[in-house]
Image (cartoon, rainbow, N blue to C red; front, side, top):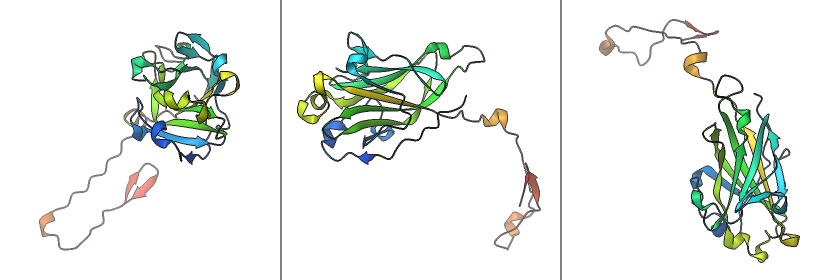
Length: 222
């Protein structure tokens, strides 16, 4: 599977009401990068208004979008996903379409991806971004990943903070970047071994010694 090679644009580090914005996340803070963006990534996967989402109780879903050859949905909990420690926050996730996975050999049984979420702020005329810097593994048993504490509701719901657009609207976005599959070293890489016996090691007086040349793959070494 060819990875989505879109590069994220440079971001401006949060500069005001940072403390309120950065409080809490279902993912450890060290694994989440919060920032302001002037623009979305050049191939942002999904940007929607709240009114364009299909609401089922507090869960709001986007239509299907494609990224990296897979089908996804953006899922937003505007009042927080309490089942994932999101009470008092806006919660955002992406969900992988299970039909993209297979319990057999092809298509793959697991998809690894980096996730970023966005909320537009008209006051700043920028996107508040939460980027998960750790790769997430989607599988038939785990098709949803995200951040349960994107924005505190007290910040999100205050008109003065800029997240409420005309007509009581909000704008959300998500970006999914497929991570390249890791090489299984034990299965795919040949094992090379070089042994060098040194006699009377404790009696050696030089500070260093050099072995004979040995072959390792297509390279020679000492």
